[in-house]
Length: 180
Length: 458
Image (cartoon, rainbow over all chains, first blue to last red; front, top):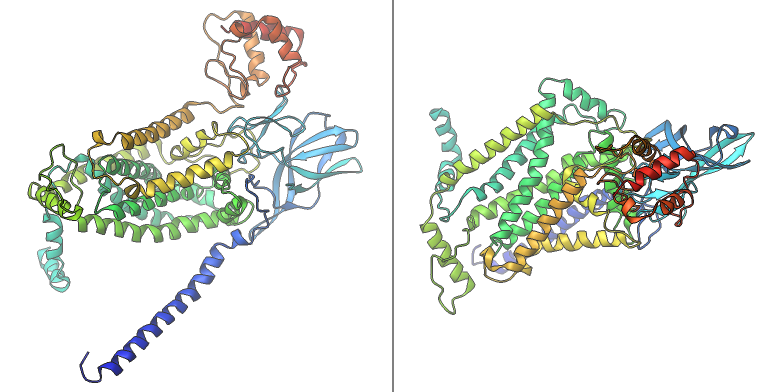
């Protein structure tokens, strides 16, 4: 920079650099806001309640509607059975029929419970052991009784259930009941 | 070759830089332990190269991912490329961990290399992020279930646990969005972090020079009142004067990396690239297990129990991560010899023994629910019948015998020593505690056999 006309040049230079900083910041914000917003959308769009202690999220919440699990009379009272239901599923942009499994337990003459088969600790697949009369988790020794109650291991809450109703002798399975 | 090379060099003027790089003096005692960093860089390049070609045939969608991986395996060199990518991932995790351990033991993170360590710690997390997002991609059983577990562990964040899970999965469920997300993170987001961090780390290492190994007798004597900076510069100058040019060390680097790469090819040719059956969200009886590098954490969850488990896990992650990243600012002494840093060595020892021990226990322990106790020598016919009942009724899912079975109930390896016959019989039929179900459906013969078997356990 030359000596003569210096102060005018200098103030112009300062103005330019300040303006460039402003333009740069605007440019960065214009890119960063949608980029970070889109990338983190699942976080702030989440409808999950905010709580100090988290609970495992089951991977099968997405199915909806009512599906028949079979005839109530074909189920033995007190003996859960693993059934695979063809259900209406929305998985991101994929919509269609998909097999969704659950354990169905007949508890009386006109009542049945449908259990989600994921352990409430970390979501591992539970298996019913007829001998031990327990749902057993293969990951960290969690065990639930036939009523879905935790009897051993780290699971923080009982097994999740689907809504059920009996219609003309058939067990109808609805949406997953996500309680507190 | 000389002609074209000279032509290019005249335009880029790069040979003086290369010569300076290869001929620069290193400190005196640079040995095999210093080859871990360069091997890490080489294996990152192997991962980038194999990863790029894998994307040419891979489709990140639940309906096509598994099939596209099968297709890759049938394409010429496909199984080899996928195998090298798979096994190099394991090698990288080991390399990065050992590299960090070596730097920690010799306290090479001291002035003026604090920032090199911090960036290195961030790179460690990036490598683990690659490992975690990478093995969902084949969409096989292991991939699916380990990610169900892994994302749920991420939910141990207090207050926003579920939000964290949804951030990782792209929604409440694990499905198409999750796979696309993990793919994007694995091939775009993490490399975008990796490349500048490696560049920073590498630049800092070359600019500062490799830290000299600590010496019992320093090459220069301390001058009282000398500043840390002056003392360091005097000592490092003496180290370089006693050292040899970089190209000596490069030969060790090359040999070590070549041996590792040979190992990776051998593993690929012998074991192949593992692939389990296609992911089945409706599986029962499948026992999820993570890759070995996350097995210690998975096994740890056996011992961390209670309502605040998730908070404890979160606390360990945060404190562990912060301590690891901020090591140079926590450990401010000037001492570098490991034998004069007992506290730091004890801490490193506990971490190493803990991680290795948990990994080994996790690898050899049989998953509960599927354990079958084998017969032992010298058992009578009735005891063998009892063992059959024991296995058939699923007793081993809660009880251990000779190290096989679950641990949620008491170990029965010495049942006959601990309880009387009557007590065992009563406990089976009408359990005192409600954790154990009543096995009142057994025939009298089955019950007798089972009791005879159990009291023979002494």
